[in-house]
Length: 244
Image (cartoon, rainbow, N blue to C red; front, side):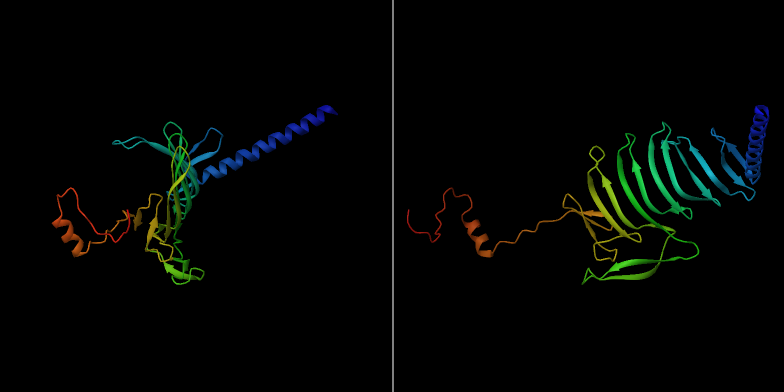
């Protein structure tokens, strides 16, 4: 009785293994070129049309002073799709990026070699089948009013949304930028404005502009008085005060 159970279990294991092998062969058969990863999964698949498909690991060596890196993620019909992670050649995480239709889409995060976050970006990718996008536009005169406007995108992907810049050691936000379809927003929803920074300077479409303090010109009478008494140590001035 026990031997029959053992034989039955053995047959099930062999059948499962055969199905797994056939599945792997079938999947690999769709690839013109591919590699097998350490976990036995198919990597770096190029289909019969020459398009990258599925999980990929891209390796880029250091060249002309530019540091090398590795990135991993998935391709769909030759275009990046979903989450991609980028590492330096020492294995430190440098970026977590999101893609759609082969372009950056959504939140992107960037880190230094110590693992501190240094920047967060927000991007909007254009659907190749629908080159327009519906966005929220705020009324300049009444910020509570929001309009939905269909806008034709000028590029396949543009900065869109809040960007945050961090102080690496503390994680403190040191700068903020808000974009509407590639242009910095001033709060009016038009994408043509100035972003205030923590140091009281301004950013006008990406160009920093320091606030200037204007001094009021002196009246002519005051200037004549100062000129007349220039160099004198003691000047008696009538102020209108009384007493002592």
